[in-house]
Structures are given as structure tokens and as C-alpha cells.
Image (cartoon, rainbow, N blue to C red; front, top):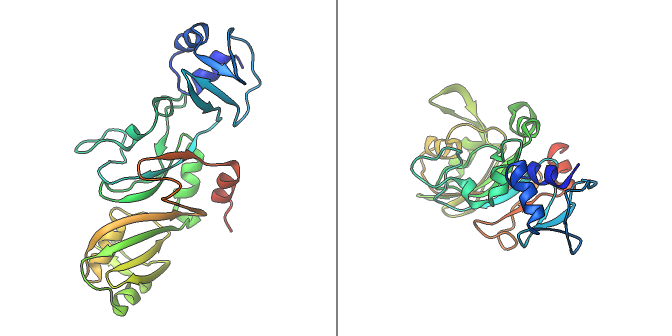
Amino acid sequence: MRWSQLLFSQGFGTRRDCEALIHGGFVEHQGALVEHDEIVMAHDDLPFRVEGRDWVYRTQALLMLNKPAGYECSQRPSAWPGVLTLLPPPLRTRSKGGVQPIGRLDQDTTGLLLLTDDGALIHRVTHPKHHVPKVYEVQTAEPVTEAQLARLRAGVVLNDDPQPVRAAACEATAERALRLTLTEGKYHQVKRMVAAVGNHVNGLHRSAFGSLTLDPEALPPGRWRWLSAEERSALLHRP
């Protein structure tokens, strides 16, 4: 494809905008200016610079964000800023419609959030039949008891579904903290499950999604990174 097509696909504006970036001397590749709208062999991880910022070409975007509190996982946020505002504009305006969150975290929930413009991938990792685990670190208002853990493992009934909802795994990590693994994604599920056993969630953080874990030192709150091809493959083809 031509450089203008490549830039357009990655969200750098209209085709005319992308041509203007090239002719204005704002695009670099391998340390040299891209002076003409020439053909380039596009492949994932192809590096380039636009207006002094390093970038890589991705056929489909898949990234991890360490979501801080105070952001909504919505493309049309109402009471809080949208989580997409934490990303650079090209990711929000890619030619496929921009990235969107894979599932949602409440505005007061922090931690691992995946975003992509790949609709098939979203379906693959969110459909209940695939049982992709998500791990949550829960801070509770009252001490966690063995009876509460047992009920969470056995299953609790929520008011919108007569079928019990079970934790795939559940363990206490402190007097007022527990680690909960779920393989479904119902509305406010963690908070409602904890409330159903007689406790209350004071803090909620997602630490893992499928094969991916969040390292808060490597990826501080509010920061994002691309996922590698290996991470994508492991996410989609977990045992």
C-alpha cells in the first residue's frame, strides 16, 4: 500500500490529511523522511514516526490499558471521562472505527482492560461458551469468612437470573480481601456476588484476563501498551 493509505488505516486523519503529513515532512521511516507517497511493504510492527512520535503499523489493534478509577468504559460517557481519552487520537480514529473496550469495568474499578478494533476477537474472548477467566482483587467492608468463600464457590443467585453464578476460584488474600476468578461477565457481577454472601465491595481491581496478567510497575495506571503476537495467540488459544 502507499504511505497515505497506511497512515489512514492507522488513524492519522483523512487520506488528504495523510498526504499532507507526508508532503509536509512529518513522516519518517528508518531515520529518513518519507518525501513521496510511495508504496511501502506494510507488515505488523513496521516502525515509523509521525510528527516526532514513534509508532508501529498494526493490521488490527489489540492493546492493554491499566485503567485508573474515574473513567467510564463507554464510547459515549455520561458522568465521567471516557476511558478512550487515555489513548492517543490515532487509536480512536482508525479506519475500522477505532478501538473499543473488550467488556467493561465500572468507573470505580481499576486494572487490566483490553481494547481492540477486531470484532471477531471480541466475540471470541467474551462469549460465555469459551469460559475465559478474569481475576479480580476485591477489598471488602467486612472480614471475609470461610462460609462466604464456600458460598461464592458453590454459587449464588442474582436477582436477574434464577441460575446460580459460581466463582471458578475464590480465596482470601487478607482479612478484608479476596481474589475472585470468574468466567462470565454479568452486570456488576463481582459486587453483586459479594453482596449476596453478606459482604460489600470497597475496592475492585482486575489483575488478569485469560492468559494476560497486569504488572502495575511495568504499566502504571493510565498507561497502555500493544500486545505482542504471542500474547494475542495465547489469549485466543488458551488450553
